[in-house]
Each structure stands twice: as structure tokens, then as C-alpha cells.
Length: 308
Image (tube, rainbow, N blue to C red; front, side, top):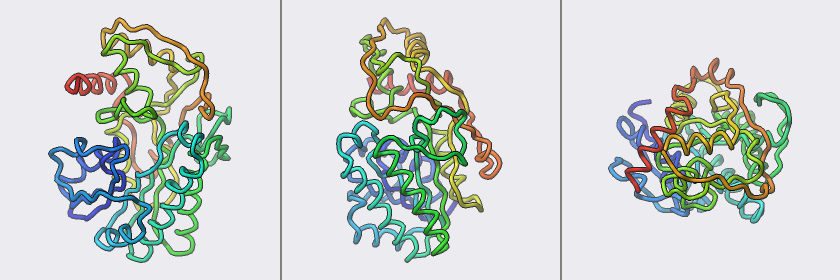
């Protein structure tokens, strides 16, 4: 993508700031973020127009959408645990705010709406790998809100011809993921603990699996989603399942840490097993991951060391 004007909601966050960094070299990038979890430090040295604001502000969203060609919608309550604690707030932020953005996209002829959905929509369905044509089984307000947006996108495409792609992103990790956020991803928390020689906390017995995908690969998928002449829902992952216990041991090994592993009770809303089929994204988006887990962990460790 070159020479376009793009809006990234949540662009000061983990994935959003990495996307802004990638797009800003050859596009005009507008970032809308209320800085509730993102930080301006994530955008240091990146040529963007930053607007501090909330996606619930309809008038603000309307003004910004007038200016852009593409919308990447990443702003959201991103935690399963927090959504269980505050379900109404989750639906307001993740679903109702998105409906307003979709309305603005239709009104101003946005070329493509790209949404970061989640693997959480699959829930605890025992069938692996997870395929886009499987029946979703959300078990948290977070997952239900993401699925609701997917369905809304399908309706807006059918009724108003709004082009869209929803990416069911699995477990993303990499630079700029904030471990101090109590709802942050497991890898960033493991990194922070290991580099401080503190215990790595696992909720449950550690046999639960996740499909971890490096943030640079996710950014590539987002950009391909915007320019591909296709609408629909796609898994973004590696197709490999990693047990959390193995991940913890790998982080300890790669960091040279003296940390131990501590187990706590399983958390409500957490899924048991996760592994994706990425055949559809390969076929229709021309996308596949390039960074393996150990390589990506190495890059992430080096970034964390610069921030220590």
C-alpha cells in the first residue's frame, strides 16, 4: 500500500503501533487512541497524525473518516478476563463503538474496513485445527463482542457494499507488548519475569495450548487484507500449537534466567486448546507467517533488554 490515507484506531497500542510504523513510510497515517492501554512512546519516531480520543465519540470518528481511504480498527477492550469482570463495558467498547465506525465508513465511501477479531470466537470447541467455517462457540463477553462485529461486517457488506476483512488473530507477541498491563499477553509477562529472575506464572496445569504469531507477520496480514480484492474472515496464526508449560521453559532457556515456574488456578473464560488452519489466508490473501516461535522470541527478548 502506497500513497493512501489510513486510520488506525488503537494505533498507540501493541499491534497498532507496529502497523503505524510499517505504513507511515509510504502513506499518511492517522492514529486515533485514547491512551487507556497504548502509549505515545510506542509511536516515538513514527510519522503519524495522532488524535487523542475515544472511538465512542461518534462526531470525532465521523470527522476522521471523512479524510481517509482505509480504516484499520484495532481499538478495543482486549482482555478476556476484563470482559468477564465488565461485560457491559466490553460490549459498549467492542461492539457499539464499531457499529458507529461502520456507519461512518459507509457514509464516506471507505475503500476497506479491516478489523482485528480474535481466535477467542472459537471458544472451547475440541476440534482442531480451528477453521473459519467452524461454528463459533464464544465463552466470554470479549469473544462474543468480536463475533458480533464479524456478523455486522457481513451485514454491512450485504446491505451497503462495504468491503471488509476480519482477521481472527491468534496469540500475538513481539516488541511493544506491555507486560505491566495486567491483561497483557502471556509471552510479554513471561519475558518480564524471566529477565528479572522472578517466577513465571501459569494459570492451570500448563498443558493448555496456544498458536503464537509474531507481530510483524500480523502487520503483514493486516496490510494484505486491506489491498486484497476479497471480503471475509481469516485466521492469522502459524498453525502450530505450543503448550504454555513448554513456552515457559523456552523463555527461561532463551533468556538464561534462573526463574521457576509457578502454577495458579485456571481463569474463567480461558480456552483450553488453540491451533489454527491458515489455508484460507494463504490462498486468498497470499499471506503466510515468516517468523518461527524461537526466532520471534529471540527478537522479542532483545527488544525487552533495550527497555530494561
